[in-house]
Amino acid sequence: MHVVLVEPEIPPNTGNIARLCAGFDVELHLVGPLGFSLEDRYLRRAGLDYWPKVRLTVWPDWKRFLEGRPAGRLVMSSARQGEPCCDFSFQPGDLLVLGPETRGLPSEVMASSELRIRIPITDNIRSLNLSTAAGIMLYEALRQVRWRSA
Image (tube, rainbow, N blue to C red; front, side, top):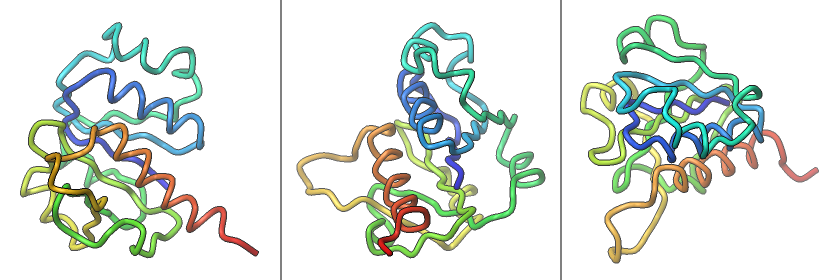
């Protein structure tokens, strides 16, 4: 399983997701351009002392990511489109793709795969925080592929 953040903008969100990935031993891919420096103190603070345990790959842009990415299905996340993540059938090696906090995945990125998932929420809010969404989606994916009941 992989988490792919496309053009992340808010350092603490990326730091929290990095910590999540370290905790589940899942590779994190950051696809640029990034909205911050990897040396950002807020990014480092959110990831605490877990950064050495994060399996991190940084890609300059989506095109380069597509050229060198690991094998697996691209599963695009959206606030309003797609199958509820709890109903989606995840597979080992899936790449969970999440977009920038303020605008979601660009159309050219969404066009890279027909697989779409969302987290069902009420109309009370526009969307969930990126790190919260990543945690929910990743946990559901891992629940299905790693921790199925015997």
